[in-house]
Image (cartoon, rainbow, N blue to C red; front, side):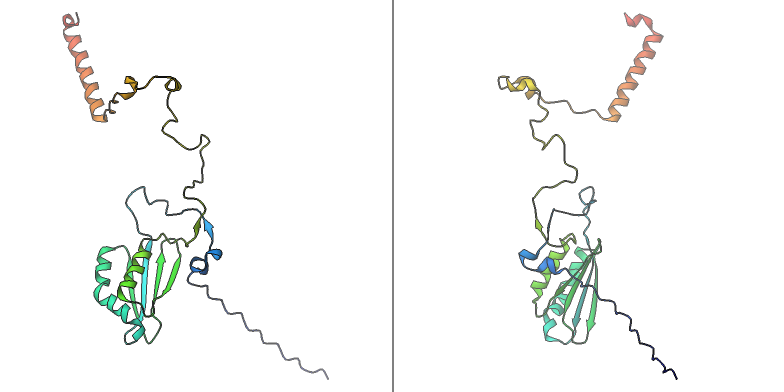
Length: 211
């Protein structure tokens, strides 16, 4: 008689939670990543847009380690919201947790900070630091200037488009020191064209004035 085989119980793998912050950003220098300066591409073309989108403050109403955060909420959080209307601030009271600050940026990055036993002014400085950030991880800059499309002509200098005859000219040169006339506006161009049209009509009506 064949023995019954008990089916094997298969336990599905639990999803591993991703860390809410980058360890490389806050670790020793030898473990930090290196790269070039990055920021939102639209910043600089118009008004400045703060990349910080949402701030979540988790604290305990009675815990001693969250005393500084409670003082910050009572005295400074309203002024912070008025100063930064584009940033959403969430207050989440918990029962005896470690007070933390979670910052979320427009590029999808999320930074977690333990503010246990921090003073009110210390928390305010950290929050100002997160407001001024772009959301990119902290890294060592390879060089201060970088472009993805380098120029074939090289780095621009004030002498790039200077005429060659200036190499042997005796300075000072009066022609180079004269002020250039500003470009006329579109309205001024239309007025000049209208004057030309009016003059043509006058000459057609009174041909004797042409002489």
